[in-house]
Length: 152
Image (cartoon, rainbow, N blue to C red; front, side, top):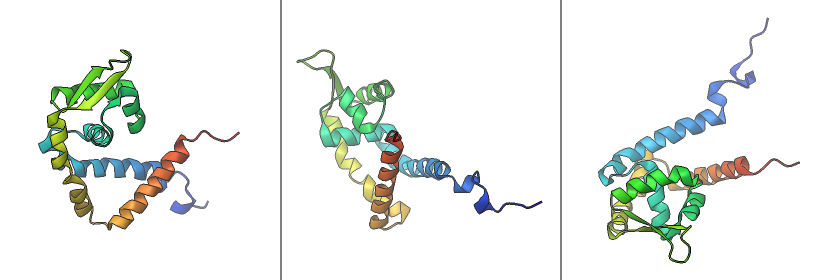
Protein backbone atom coordinates (compact mmCIF):
# COMPACT_ATOMS: atom_id res chain seq x y z
CA UNK A 1 0.00 0.00 0.00
CA UNK A 2 1.46 3.36 -1.00
CA UNK A 3 0.74 6.66 0.64
CA UNK A 4 0.35 9.68 -1.58
CA UNK A 5 2.34 12.76 -0.76
CA UNK A 6 0.59 16.08 -0.26
CA UNK A 7 1.61 17.09 -3.77
CA UNK A 8 -0.12 13.99 -5.17
CA UNK A 9 -3.35 14.76 -3.30
CA UNK A 10 -5.58 16.95 -5.51
CA UNK A 11 -7.83 17.58 -2.49
CA UNK A 12 -5.16 18.79 -0.06
CA UNK A 13 -6.68 21.82 1.63
CA UNK A 14 -3.49 23.86 1.63
CA UNK A 15 -3.20 23.52 -2.17
CA UNK A 16 -6.69 24.77 -3.00
CA UNK A 17 -6.92 28.17 -4.68
CA UNK A 18 -10.41 28.64 -3.22
CA UNK A 19 -9.05 28.11 0.31
CA UNK A 20 -6.21 30.61 -0.15
CA UNK A 21 -8.62 33.18 -1.62
CA UNK A 22 -11.17 32.70 1.19
CA UNK A 23 -8.57 33.06 3.94
CA UNK A 24 -6.88 36.01 2.21
CA UNK A 25 -10.23 37.75 1.79
CA UNK A 26 -11.22 37.32 5.44
CA UNK A 27 -7.84 38.33 6.82
CA UNK A 28 -7.35 41.38 4.58
CA UNK A 29 -10.88 42.61 5.28
CA UNK A 30 -10.11 42.23 9.00
CA UNK A 31 -7.10 44.55 8.49
CA UNK A 32 -9.51 47.19 7.16
CA UNK A 33 -11.93 46.93 10.10
CA UNK A 34 -10.09 49.13 12.64
CA UNK A 35 -9.65 51.81 9.96
CA UNK A 36 -13.30 51.72 8.87
CA UNK A 37 -14.92 51.46 12.32
CA UNK A 38 -14.22 55.11 13.26
CA UNK A 39 -15.86 56.13 9.97
CA UNK A 40 -18.92 54.04 10.77
CA UNK A 41 -18.42 51.89 7.67
CA UNK A 42 -18.35 48.17 7.06
CA UNK A 43 -16.10 46.86 4.30
CA UNK A 44 -18.99 46.41 1.82
CA UNK A 45 -20.16 49.97 2.58
CA UNK A 46 -16.60 51.20 2.02
CA UNK A 47 -16.63 49.59 -1.44
CA UNK A 48 -19.89 51.41 -2.23
CA UNK A 49 -18.37 54.69 -1.08
CA UNK A 50 -15.24 54.09 -3.19
CA UNK A 51 -17.42 53.63 -6.27
CA UNK A 52 -19.42 56.77 -5.49
CA UNK A 53 -16.34 58.89 -4.72
CA UNK A 54 -15.08 57.94 -8.17
CA UNK A 55 -18.30 58.04 -10.21
CA UNK A 56 -21.16 59.75 -8.32
CA UNK A 57 -23.98 59.90 -9.14
CA UNK A 58 -24.77 56.38 -10.35
CA UNK A 59 -27.93 54.45 -10.98
CA UNK A 60 -28.52 51.45 -8.73
CA UNK A 61 -27.85 49.16 -11.69
CA UNK A 62 -24.60 50.94 -12.61
CA UNK A 63 -23.42 50.72 -9.02
CA UNK A 64 -24.35 47.02 -8.82
CA UNK A 65 -22.43 46.36 -12.05
CA UNK A 66 -19.32 48.20 -10.82
CA UNK A 67 -19.33 46.32 -7.52
CA UNK A 68 -20.32 43.04 -9.17
CA UNK A 69 -23.25 42.69 -6.78
CA UNK A 70 -26.92 41.97 -7.31
CA UNK A 71 -29.06 45.13 -6.88
CA UNK A 72 -31.09 43.31 -4.20
CA UNK A 73 -27.88 42.68 -2.22
CA UNK A 74 -26.85 46.30 -2.62
CA UNK A 75 -30.14 47.86 -1.48
CA UNK A 76 -29.74 47.20 2.27
CA UNK A 77 -26.19 48.60 2.16
CA UNK A 78 -27.50 51.75 0.50
CA UNK A 79 -30.30 52.14 3.05
CA UNK A 80 -27.74 52.02 5.89
CA UNK A 81 -25.45 54.51 4.13
CA UNK A 82 -28.43 56.82 3.60
CA UNK A 83 -29.41 56.51 7.27
CA UNK A 84 -25.81 57.43 8.19
CA UNK A 85 -26.17 60.59 6.09
CA UNK A 86 -23.53 59.66 3.48
CA UNK A 87 -25.65 59.10 0.38
CA UNK A 88 -28.91 60.05 -1.28
CA UNK A 89 -31.23 57.67 -3.11
CA UNK A 90 -33.72 59.38 -5.40
CA UNK A 91 -35.81 58.42 -8.40
CA UNK A 92 -34.40 59.91 -11.60
CA UNK A 93 -36.46 62.81 -12.91
CA UNK A 94 -36.22 61.45 -16.46
CA UNK A 95 -37.28 57.88 -15.58
CA UNK A 96 -38.92 56.92 -12.29
CA UNK A 97 -37.75 53.32 -12.71
CA UNK A 98 -34.15 54.43 -12.22
CA UNK A 99 -32.86 54.88 -8.67
CA UNK A 100 -30.07 57.46 -8.64
CA UNK A 101 -27.48 57.13 -5.88
CA UNK A 102 -25.37 60.17 -5.00
CA UNK A 103 -23.22 61.57 -2.23
CA UNK A 104 -24.29 64.03 0.43
CA UNK A 105 -21.92 66.77 1.62
CA UNK A 106 -21.08 64.55 4.59
CA UNK A 107 -20.40 61.64 2.23
CA UNK A 108 -18.11 63.79 0.07
CA UNK A 109 -16.30 65.06 3.18
CA UNK A 110 -15.71 61.50 4.37
CA UNK A 111 -13.41 60.98 1.39
CA UNK A 112 -10.65 63.03 3.07
CA UNK A 113 -10.63 60.57 5.99
CA UNK A 114 -10.77 57.58 3.63
CA UNK A 115 -7.70 58.78 1.73
CA UNK A 116 -5.64 57.68 4.75
CA UNK A 117 -6.76 54.06 4.36
CA UNK A 118 -4.75 52.81 1.33
CA UNK A 119 -1.35 53.90 2.70
CA UNK A 120 -2.29 52.48 6.13
CA UNK A 121 -3.16 49.13 4.53
CA UNK A 122 0.09 49.06 2.54
CA UNK A 123 2.04 49.84 5.72
CA UNK A 124 0.15 47.22 7.75
CA UNK A 125 0.71 44.50 5.14
CA UNK A 126 4.39 45.40 4.89
CA UNK A 127 4.55 44.40 1.24
CA UNK A 128 6.08 46.49 -1.53
CA UNK A 129 3.46 48.39 -3.54
CA UNK A 130 4.74 46.71 -6.71
CA UNK A 131 4.00 43.28 -5.23
CA UNK A 132 0.49 44.40 -4.24
CA UNK A 133 -0.06 45.71 -7.79
CA UNK A 134 1.06 42.33 -9.17
CA UNK A 135 -1.31 40.57 -6.78
CA UNK A 136 -4.16 42.84 -7.87
CA UNK A 137 -3.43 42.07 -11.53
CA UNK A 138 -3.34 38.32 -10.84
CA UNK A 139 -6.62 38.44 -8.92
CA UNK A 140 -8.23 40.50 -11.69
CA UNK A 141 -7.13 37.80 -14.13
CA UNK A 142 -8.64 35.08 -11.92
CA UNK A 143 -11.92 37.01 -11.70
CA UNK A 144 -12.03 37.43 -15.49
CA UNK A 145 -11.32 33.72 -16.03
CA UNK A 146 -13.97 32.68 -13.50
CA UNK A 147 -16.62 34.96 -14.97
CA UNK A 148 -15.98 34.08 -18.61
CA UNK A 149 -18.35 31.38 -19.85
CA UNK A 150 -16.58 28.14 -20.80
CA UNK A 151 -15.82 27.76 -24.50
CA UNK A 152 -17.88 25.30 -26.49
